[in-house]
Amino acid sequence: LIELDRAHLIHPVASYRSHEKHGVRVLASAKGATVTDASGKQLIDGFAGLWCVNAGYGHESIVEAAARQMRELPYATAYFGLGSEPAIRLASELADRAPGDLNHVYFTLGGSDAVDSTIRFIRYYWNARGRPERDQFISVEQGYHGSSTAGAGLTALPAFHAGFGLPFDWQHKIPSHYAYRNPVGEDPQAIIEASLAALKSKVEAIGPELVAAFYVEPIQGSGGVLVPPKGWVKAMREFCRAHDILFVADEVITGFGRTGPLFACSEEEVVPDFMTTAKGLTSGYVPMGAVFMADHVYETIAEGAGTTAIGHGYTYSAHPVSAAVGLEVLKLYENGLFDNGVKAGARLMQGLQSLRDHPLVGDVRGRGMLAAVELVVDKSNKTPLPASAEPARRIFDRAWENGLVIRAFGNGVLGYAPPLCCTETEIDAIVERTRITLDETLE
Ligand code: PMP
Image 1: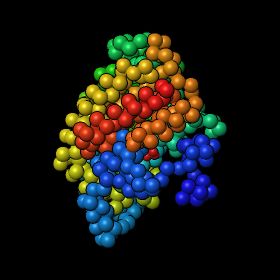
Image 2 (image 1 turned 90 degrees about the vertical axis):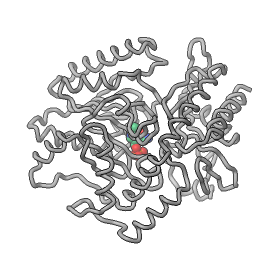
Image 3 (image 1 turned 135 degrees about the vertical axis):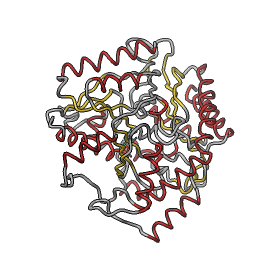
Image 4 (image 1 turned 135 degrees about the horizontal axis):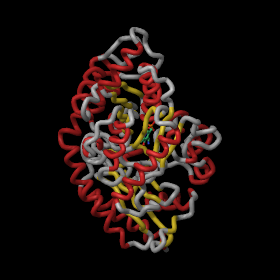
């Protein structure tokens, strides 16, 4: 398998060289929070795949829901007015639970095309309002909004821009709230004020009448699990409301219980104009994403389009099998998984905080089942690990040998996003195996 993989399967994010050197690790099966590789080695999946298998692996009821739907009706296009019962029901169940008046749901295949869809919908919205000049987009440094070309421009990670002329000239960034390395220090109020001032001056520099939308993640995920101070999301949302700028909450990672509630926006007491989700929506079993739109946005776009369909859609939008899985996953979440995630998340944070005394650990942060440990060379001056994939790869490999899958970001940040079904024993093992891995890294 490793030889065939080297010869034929492209892993786009991994460095090809490093990948060829180390070889792929082939997973064979999984149950709960445990994955088993092709050699039979069992590991705790501390990252739920790619922050997505929130419900855990091996739920027979999900498999049955998918099989039933495949037998009955495997496909129905949402493109020209056909529907399917699971897609309609899922949209309705989600709208019932979404913050405020986010009552309209557009299904995609994942997070990148959900973000991409918002860019198009936002342009349709401003066109419908007779303001096509409002075409400038702002997002946050260290943010991740997918790797479609337009979404990658909103994403603020350099590797996603190189060679593509990204970001586009209509895509702008303001600095992150990243507390551990913030020039204004870690005081929450100072960080909120700095971000507000940055957004205000960015909007003024672009021209207040030209800004279409502002994108945030309630917690920045791929940038290193950066948690904004309480009130940050709300302050930014209120600024946007006051300046008639659409506010988009990208909940692709934070949605579906990852931080505790169904959506992190609820905890922030924020109702965005758009919300994007994916990952936990179908818990990784099948691909699906969803864009939520507020009433006023939907009505404006629909009215502007009149009776002509707007030119946007995917063959696999509102896929009946994905929707059937989404409905079943939602049931599982609400029958105990969310509650377990809250308890397990508190234990995970407490456990990881206990690693603060380790010489390599500079910062520990997170909320619920979303956490990070930031490693440094020197704690006293926060010297970061060398910016190279190799140290991260070595830590990933050591953790693997110790029976733990974590995400080791290139900047020395270890990411945690375990399935919400983790037991106390599994959470304790995640922490313990991390400590052993860090001790070995020191040697
Ligand atoms: N937005 C955010 C906040 C994400 O974390 C991700 C994926 N990590 C995406 C969008 C893109 O989602 P996908 O990988 O499903 O295309």
